[in-house]
Amino acid sequence: MTIKIKKQSGKSLRQTVEEMSGVDMSLCYQCKKCASGCPVTKYTQSPPSEIIRRLHLGAGDELLESDLVWMCLSCETCYGRCPMDINIPAVIDALRSLALEKGSKSPRGDMPLFNRKFLEAVKAYGRSYDLSMIMGYKLGSGSLMQDVEKFPSMLAKGKMAVLPPSGAEKKVVKRIFDRSKQAKGKKK
Amino acid sequence: MRYAYYPGCSAHSTARDMHESADAVARLLGIDLVEMKGWSCCGATSAHQTDRVMAASLPAANLLLAKEMGLDTVVTCAACYSRMKTANHEITSSADMRAAVADAVGQPYDGSVKVRHFVEILLEDFGIDKLRKRFKKSLNGLKVASYYGCLLVRPGNVTHFDDPENPTSLDRLVTAMGGESIDWPHKVECCGGGLNLTRTDVAVKLSSSIVEMAAASGADCIAVACPMCQASLDLRQKDIDAATGKKHHMPVLYITQLLGLCLGIPEKELGLSRLMVSPAGVLKALQPASSHQV
Ligand code: SF4
Ligand code: SF4
Image (cartoon, rainbow over all chains, first blue to last red; front, side):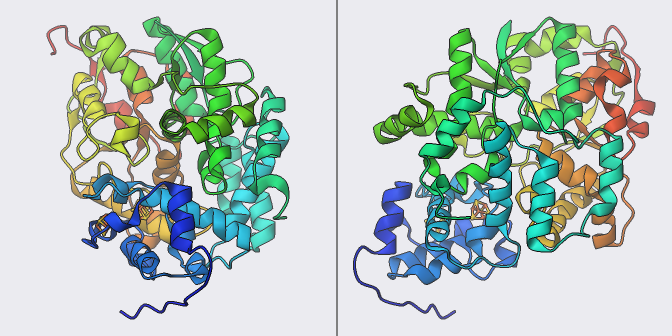
C-alpha cells in the first residue's frame, strides 16, 4: 500500500484532531486489531488503523475525504478492542466535524445530507420525524425509488408516523442548536 | 420500583412495538415507568457525527428532566441508551464539556443521573428469580439467538452493560423463559444500521451475515433489544433474501415481546402484528409453564 501525504503548514490536522477527540495518537503501534474487527474494512479504502497512520505521517485535509469518515458505523468495535484504548470513533467524529466545516467531499451515500435532514426535524419538532427525514434525504440524494415498496406496510403496521411528533420541550432544543457551532449556518 | 422513562423518538415510529411491549411488561410486573414530560430527541447518530457539544447537550436536556423527578432514567432503545451514557461520561470526565453543555442547555448538569436499560432493571432490580415465578407460558425449548449488537455493550467502559464481547443478559432471560439460548458467534456484530439509507448495499451485507449465521446456528428466532437492529434484520429481511438468494424466515422479536408472551400478556398489547416477518412459529412453540420448571 502506498500512502500519499501532502505536507502543510500551521497547526497540523493531527494536532487539531487530538485536541478535539482527546486521543493521543502516538500510543498507536499499528497492531491493526481495530482494522480486523471493523465491519466496514472490507468495503472501504482506508481501515481505521490507516487513518491513524496517515495522521502520524502528517496528513492534511485530503484525509477528510477518506471513505471511512462517512462509512464508519460508530459501532465502537475498534475502541473496544484496541490494546492501547484509542478512541477511534471519537477521532472519526472529529474528522466528520472538520469535514463539514471545510466542506470536504463525501464519498458515495450522502451521510451529511442524511444528518442534516435528521437534525432539521429535531430542531423543528424537538424530536425526530422519520417521514420528513427520509423524504428530505431521498429528494436531496436522488434515491427516490429505493425502498418505496416498504412504505405501505410500514404505514399499515404503524411503523412510520404520518404526523409530525409533538410533546417535546422545544425551547431547550432550540437553544442547544443555536449555540452549536456546526448548526450556526455555515452549512445549508 | 419507579423510574423516569425516556421512550425515545422511535417509540412513536419504527419501534412502537418495543415501546408497547416494554410498557405492558412493566405494568404487569408493577414497575412504574413515569414518562418524562416534554422529553426531546437524544440526537442519535446524526448529532455526534456533527457536533460534539450538541451530541452531549441533547441527552443532557433529558437527563435534567429525570433529575427534577428525582429518579433514575430508564430507556428501552439501545441507541438512546448509548447516547445518554456517552453524554454522562463526557460531561463527568471533562470540565470543558461540562461548561459547554451548561451553556447550551441553560443550566448546570454534572452527569450524575443514572441511565439504565429496561433489561438491566429487570435483571438487577426486579430479579430473574422473581420474574421466573411470574411466567405463565414457556418457550418450551424454542431456539433463540440473543443478539445484542453494538450500542448496549460498547464501549464497555462507558455503558457497563455486560461483558462487551460475550454478553449474557438476554440469554439469561431466554433460558428463564424456557427457551434454548443458542451459542453463536454474531452476538455483538454490527447490523450496519447506520448505513441503512445512505449505503444500503453495505448495510444489507452486514445484516445478511447476522440472519444467515443465526439460521446456520439453528435459531428459530432472534431476540433483540435495539430498534435499529430490529429494523435491519426484520424490515430488511426481504432485501437480505434478495442479496443472499436464499429464503429466510427468521422472526426478529424484541426481548420484551418474548417476555410479554411468557407473562401471558395478550398479543395485541405486545405489538406483534407490527413485525414484518410473522412470529407464528414462536407463538406455536409456547406451552403452559409447568410449576416445577426452573
Ligand atoms: S487497535 Fe489501537 S493500537 Fe492497534 S492499530 Fe488500531 S488504533 Fe492502533
Ligand atoms: S467504529 Fe467505525 S472504524 Fe471503528 S470498527 Fe466500527 S465502523 Fe470500524
